Figure 1 (cartoon, one colour):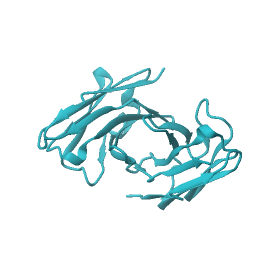
Figure 2 (cartoon, rainbow over the protein chains, first blue to last red):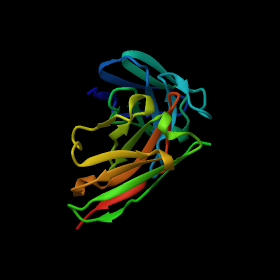
Figure 3 (tube, each protein chain N blue to C red):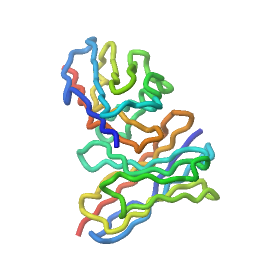
Length: 108
Length: 118
């Protein structure tokens, strides 16, 4: 089974800064079904990115996803206070599903 | 509009069984992969298992740690998916979500809470 490892564990940045979140797979992801979610306390995970780089409906363009093979990245180009949350990557293709352990983004 | 509604959660004692349901609407569930995902209090997301779509003969896959205690099934006439959980443990306490994947886009329900406690 593929294991997803997210880094860093916590990211503390100021509004307007750029956030770069990493998700590394233990094996190459061949089918491209990699998603990113944002979760705030007490809320259901919100899909930000699917298929590695496609923004979900209603998601601002400051959120972007890139990557291939074993390395994937979620970038938030200009942080806003409401971006404070935990972010998860998720593999959901033909192989058994798996999630990264999450990256907590704190806004100073 | 795609909707997923989970039900069946509640308080059970260790060793008991429970069946969760996921009712789908706005799409034909048999045409798509559907997963169960859980989140224990204060913890991250954990993949529980999946039932693949009709072209894949509804093959099921499970997280290795749960195999044997949890069983996923479908009732296509009700456009629904189920999670049968047996020999429940305190550590199975979590919010259980169902998810569907339509043309690569994930959709999630709001979850149903399972509490295992004596």
